[in-house]
Length: 293
Image (cartoon, rainbow, N blue to C red; front, side):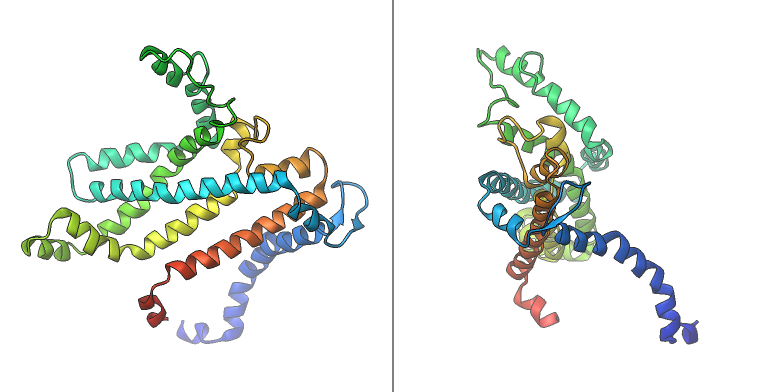
């Protein structure tokens, strides 16, 4: 076995199928998206090369930047929600009674499809028969808000199911990381008189800091390219009040048949995500990490 694995030709032969799949399924479409972004194209007919015109249009497109602002807000709320998920995981990992039951309850949204979650929350937000407005009416509020029709509320109303949808995902990641902390460290701190807050802040959080950095990157990337729940619940409306970059790109490419401009937005979104990921990693890399590298 060692003889086989020391042969570079055999290693290349084994990795070649995976490399070909990676190139065909990921990198070729990325290159083609950038290429189509240089064209005026309806997705079917002949293409016309227009250089960087689509990208120049994008820079001056107020609708795009409005959708980018909404995506940025979603990313900020997603990162802030990680604090709540981490707090819940700290409680669940402290061996409280019923921790397994709560962990499974938090995982339920992950088992539902985005369409099912959208349908559920559309009923909750229903203006007359929804649980939310019935509750507000029962406590004396005569004109409860139109959650998905009010342009000043719709974006934040949609953020709630989105954050709820991914709560279980992040909680299970934090929970697994916290459970891997050696119990001897926690017991030693307790014997030395450390409070539960001190144990969490000075022992557990530093030991899972690497996982926290990864989840921040995942939350930001997922928010910037988020699409499905918003598409089903509001389709970016009303009047673009809940439009995000991915839904705006979809409308231009597949509804107005401006495939060239849609591709330019898609390629710009990719570059933006790469740039944001780079800066997050730079900001969250500590001196100790640099020493290790």
